[in-house]
Amino acid sequence: MNPQPHPQQHPPHEPRLLPWSGPDGKSSYLITDANDGPVSRLADTTESIQLNMGTQLLAHAHALLPDTPPGDLRFLAERLTEALRDALRIAESRGRRLSRLN
Image (cartoon, rainbow, N blue to C red):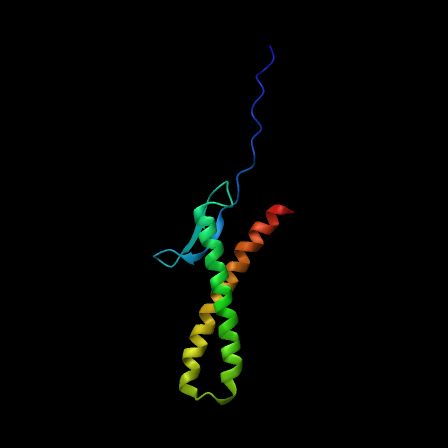
């Protein structure tokens, strides 16, 4: 008696780290088989916006730092910290997705 062939199963996809946090500040993940779904596209767009904002903030900081009064530095440092956090989250997410391709 020959067993029935099983359909080929694909390994499950690793959850995608999303570029935003949940309401409690914890990381949010997307589990999907498709990379072109609406949440994936929203995450891609959000990542692009976050990276663009980081680039603009860095240019702004570079121009302001030489002549900035100490009180204004806190605001700039807070925004740069947020941009760096976003960029690191994007790098982690993209690194995870790239490692699956290798």
